Image (tube, rainbow, N blue to C red; front, side):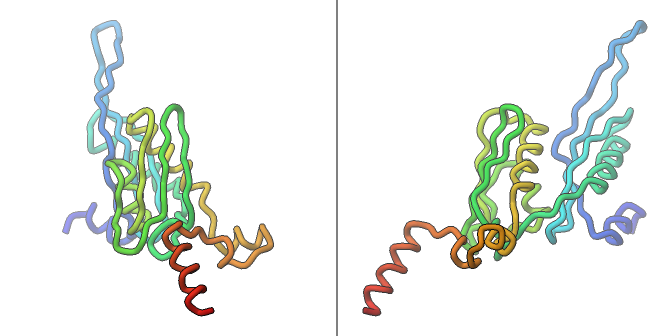
Length: 185
């Protein structure tokens, strides 16, 4: 087992590379090339973060980005493996819409959003990205949406309601409950 694998096992975080870019700086003698890496880090238990690292070599850029991500973790609110309510995340011209899903549906999302949700411990969610599909913007828009999530209990407490009253119900679920009420009468 290598030192990197042991380090991942000890702190419990996994990292995934979203994007690697080669960046050129034009100087008097020509161009100087370096690499930029966008990395997402998570423990699959509700902690996730992202980081950007720049270095002369790809592994060094990934390592820097991973360290940056571990310093800037965000907690993901989880309700039975999904998010508690619909949310939209914005960054620049990117928009990521996230919807809660029934148990067993899986993660219906594209590239970067899928990585964030998997590493954040979300098992069932439907996401759609609109506008710019740039990896950096999509990641930041997703984190904007995640930061808007609160627990059902804290939301209900702020509104002065019971937690059952604030949970979203789909139209089909409402119809079934109404039919059950009619049948009970």
